[in-house]
Image 1 (cartoon, rainbow, N blue to C red):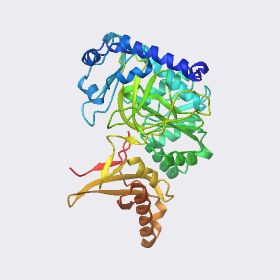
Image 2 (cartoon, helix red, strand yellow; image 1 turned 30 degrees about the horizontal axis):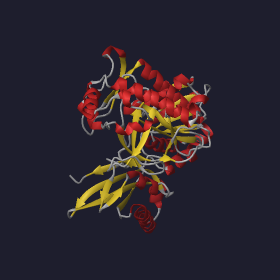
Image 3 (spheres, rainbow, N blue to C red; image 1 turned 90 degrees about the vertical axis):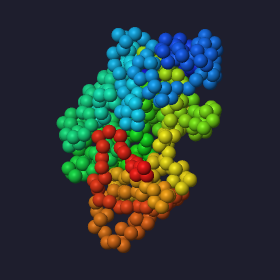
Length: 431
């Protein structure tokens, strides 16, 4: 499925009716699992009593802790012989979570990703290079199947080996890439070291950025350097992975495919629903998942539904850029700070390089923030007076954005550690 005009531009009334039918079917499917059978009974939930979409607010939430507690098969709704794949979280912050897929689930997922790619302008004659991890991480296989469903030549290059990535782009005329924002920064550095000018030496025209919260400033850096249109992608393994929400060419929020997901924004403290335009926690319900439907999943991601209609003509709601996660929020001297705020301030400063690290420490029983910032190589050819002025400038910009004053340290390029997966932006040394 590349472009379904009837589905993507249907009337609000028709979309609501479609969602209601799929929600009811999902609830009847979910009750087949040990987890939801118990939870529905405890909360008096009867699928046949769901009469409107608004009735979703009567249903209990599902949390990551529920998925961990039910590991491995507690949310499975079909016989094990009907599942053909699983994806899992890393488990770095506790018991891993796992999601199972039937053959139908994989097909639907591929349709959603291909729909996203087509919306941005990818066509069958493009060459798509997928620079993200394969395996249990959903980003690699999710986009891979979407590219193949669309009919593009798909290069499963995976992560790392950056010089070979660039060589593949040159050899096969890659036009579309998918990568995480922090790796895009790394790619820039290596291209500069190799003397490769992507605007002159490559055929890139589209880049998909996802898996990490990133600022608008990062997107603009990517677009300027590579000469591409860069699109923000949102997904999470509990909801398949990529393909949940995606920017259209208007780049005014990410369309969330409401035929596949029921979307809510709630106050993370009171758990009450919030109207479009108000920022809160994103809650999602699968509407077309067969093997493992998930009801009212609290994603911990903070965003809002953008009010109004998109100029592209699609009726599906638009999510604003993810500003952070409820569990990623830092509290320094009583001020709430999200790492993406730090990035936003840094990337507006031309002298700043491609990487940074937030270090949290406890000094004299007080929580403090220290920030190590990689600078452009030529900056260190300046005298100490210039470096001090630049350090003060960065400190001032951060104070204006964060309302606290971090200690800023300027470091040489490629000084800070880099990971093959998602960037590690915060190091907590307070324990």
